[in-house]
Image (cartoon, rainbow, N blue to C red; front, side, top):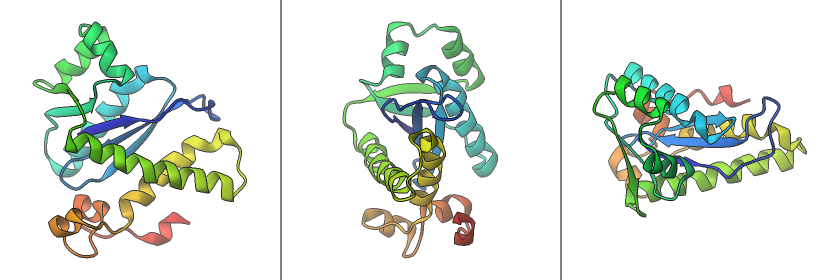
Length: 178
């Protein structure tokens, strides 16, 4: 599971200020979460891990993130925080590792760029308040997950495949986007 954070935003309607993008490594399916602060990291990642276990029957063993991320620095400085311990106990054997510009981490960072671009276009084009960024972020993560892939992903998943179809085994109903 590769994770990356957005920068801090103006609080949305629910007080969320940070976006978290998690990428399941095999299918490249994106999971978007909006958080009130970086401290909600464990809850959001646990939700993603539970979804993957429920949907695919596999257990996440490694979480990769930037070594300069706020969460990784906090874990490095105090790995025995209560939330970290609960998280590690629930997911026995799970490791959180920092990746110094590894290909996997670059992949999720590169996936963050189109998500942010779609989010900004949605907000600007519809002339929406910045307080709606959270909803737009989640919608953008879905849009990026359901569009056909190109390059090496196409070779691995097949022509016309999407991260969504690789993950779930069926194609997304695009009428749900509107």
